[in-house]
Length: 95
Image 1 (cartoon, rainbow, N blue to C red):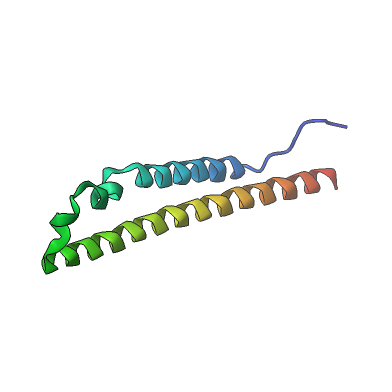
Image 2 (cartoon, rainbow, N blue to C red):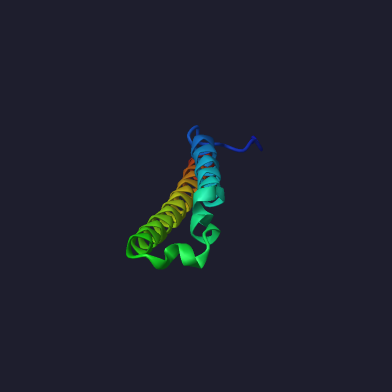
């Protein structure tokens, strides 16, 4: 009886992609655009046009945060699927 662990051939690929997606999410959140609203003096936002820009910037930053969360969720699902693949492979080897 072999004690060698069975690995699904695509599980490691999914794990690598999951790591890459998490890295991308972290990179999005570290970009300087995420802090643009904090850079300007409050007086800068006093005109109607500037206030519109501030609202649009806030919306775009929120969309970027959501995109980062979506990447993390996809990474989570990739890891979960990789675990399922390996479990399935182990079960079939034992059976």
